[in-house]
Amino acid sequence: MAGVTLKDIKKVYPFTSEDKKAKKRKKKKGEIEASEKKVNLQITEEGVVAVQQFSLDIADKEFIVLVGPSGCGKSTTLRMIAGLEEITSGELYIDGKLVNDVAPKDRDIAMVFQSYALYPHMTVYNNMAFSLKMKHVPKAEIDKKVREAAEILDITEYLHRKPKALSGGQRQRVAIGRAIVRNPKVFLMDEPLSNLDAKLRNQMRAEIIKLREKINTTFIYVTHDQTEAMTLGDRIVIMRDGFIQQIGTPQEVFNHPANLFVAGFIGTPQMNFFRDAELKKNGDTYSVEILGKEFVLPEDKQEKLRANGVEPGKVIAGVRPVHLSIADDGIAAKVDVSEMMGSELHLHMDVNGSDVVAVVPTADLGDSMISSHQDIGFTMKPNLIHLFDPETEKSLL
Image (cartoon, rainbow, N blue to C red; front, side, top):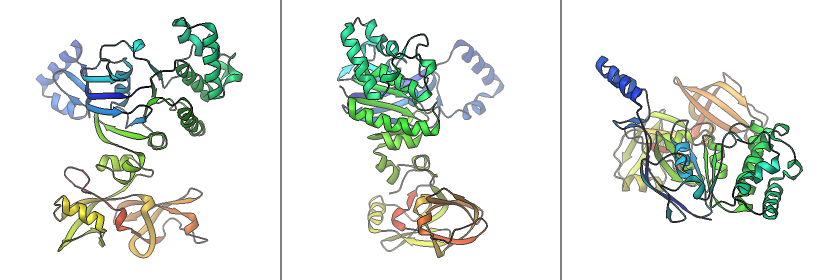
C-alpha cells in the first residue's frame, strides 16, 4: 500500500497547428478575446491549461474523492496519476518514488473506468485473470486471487458467464474485481457509477464502502456527483476550472465552505444566497440584515469577524434549505411550489421576487401541510448563517 503526493502538478494541452492557424485568423478579425471569454479554463500561449497548481498529500489507505463540475480537470488529474496523461510540470510521487517518467504498467496502480471496458469474448473469470496471465503468474495463484475477489464482490456465480449476460451493476463489479486481483498500491476510479441507474448507484456506493474495508488500500475516486463524494470520501477535493477550491472532510466542506462556489456546489438542494444582505456593527457586536430582518451573530462568528478585521457593509449571506424553519412572525413569503418528498417537504418560496428554498421535515408539521400559493413566514438560526465577500466570494468566517 502507498501514499500519493502531487506537487504543483500542471497539465497544458498544447495547441495543434490548426488551432494556431485559427487563433491567428481570429486575432486578425479581433474575435480572439470574445471567444476566449466563453472558455472557463485558462488559455495561454502554450495551450489550454486543464489543471494547475494542484498540490495534495494522500495518506496510505486514505479514500480521496476529486469532485467538481464537468471540465474542471478532475479526470485529467486522475489520468496523470495513472500515467495515461503526461504531466506538463510538477512532481508526482507514489510510495515516495518520483514516477513522472514511469510507465503506467510499472506504477503498481489499478484503474476502473466509467465504461466497464470488459473483453466481450471472455468469461468473467478470464476478464479478471487476464492481467495476471500477462504477468505469467502461476495458475494456482491466479485462481486463488480471482476467486477471492469474486467472493468479496459477490460475483462467484457469474465467473463462467460472459459480460453480455450480466447487468450494468454486475459488469461494474467485474471491472472492479479485475483491478482487485492485481493487489495494487493505489486504486483509481474514474466515475465508475455514472452509467448506472439511481437505485444501482446507491447499491454500488454501499458496495464500494464495504470493499474499501476489505481490501484496505489507497483509493482516489473521481465523480461529479456530490452525494458520492460526501458518502465515500475520507477527504474531498473540490475542483473548478483546473484549480483546487477546497480540501477537507465531508463535514468540513459542508459546515465551513471556503467560498461561494463550494457553498453552492456541496449540499442538495443548493444553499440559498441572499446577495443584498448587510453586515452591521454596533460597538463590538456584529449582526446581519437579511430581507429586512436583523440577526445578531453568535460569539464564535463574532470572534472570527473581529479577528479578520471585517468591516460593516454589503455581504452575501448563505443559508442551507435544511436550516430554514417556518415561523409565523418570520420573513414574509409566498409558496410558489410545495413538493412532498415523503419525510420532507421542499418549499420554493417567493420573497420580494427572489426564490428561496426551504426543506421542512413533515414530522414537524403534523396534520397541517403547506400548499402552493400559501402565505407563510420563515426564519433562520444565526449560528447557521454563512457570510461571503461579494467581491472575492471568499468566506468571511
